[in-house]
Length: 208
View 1 (cartoon, rainbow, N blue to C red):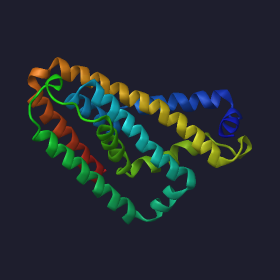
View 2 (cartoon, rainbow, N blue to C red):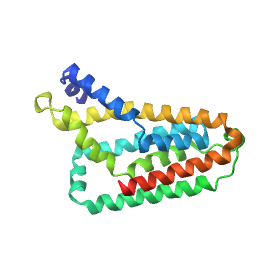
View 3 (cartoon, rainbow, N blue to C red):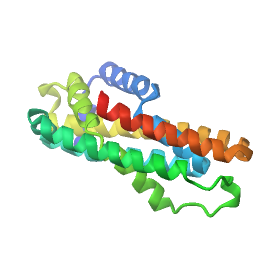
View 4 (cartoon, rainbow, N blue to C red):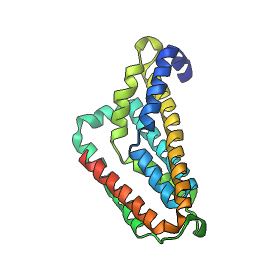
């Protein structure tokens, strides 16, 4: 049903949407930096799982955008402010954990559980109120009433955007993980770099 509606969108418009989405996802933002920090700290596996978790977090925002709750949040800035500070606090917690982590290489320590890494990535995205506002601003530009129900177009386009974005974020995390493994002798320094990235994301979330 949803994909039937997406099929009504002209191919040129759909390709423009996909191309624009790829460019936006390739530009390093909070999601990419989070996966990169996790990759540096825990290796390619951790980077990939963090990217996957971030993608699941985007699905949460896509759900809000589809049902229109993002518009409600936009009308009540205090809601966004509360979520923003919760997200910043969570990132600062991750920064503290990274800063105080034991300086062991990923190959010599017990790997974190996949669920824990994915959950951390999802929370880092869910606690950032900006994605739902971005989706509400970006997706409607490619919708028209003659293509079918608007909510189906929003959901279908959002799923495409989420899928491509998740792959790109996972790729960043994997590349950072290989970099971290090559520099495993300096794991203590890499943990501190990860901590600085997490703390920087917290500040960016509150200030911007």
